[in-house]
Image (cartoon, rainbow, N blue to C red; front, side):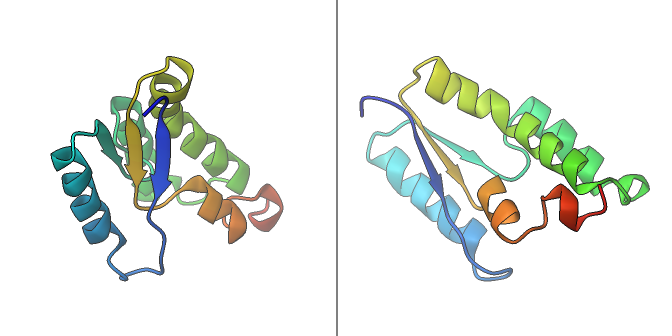
Length: 113
């Protein structure tokens, strides 16, 4: 593998994304690949801190724009190390910001921002 890869396992709620992501991660590691299994947000120290902010009921009214930037901040350490610093690894996620944008849940105009 000449550079990092980002793999997202997508599907509706309860469809087994996390289970399949975990199984794929195990398979890839057994095959000799360096894999970081991530979750949205989470997977890194910063990502877990952002996750706590987003899941805290006191922050329920944050705007869509704020939520979008928090998700991007949570992803940055993984992307920075993998794609900008050239680590040869895969990031395996069971959901992604692309999905939130596609469904309109991370767009400012749909969240009153």
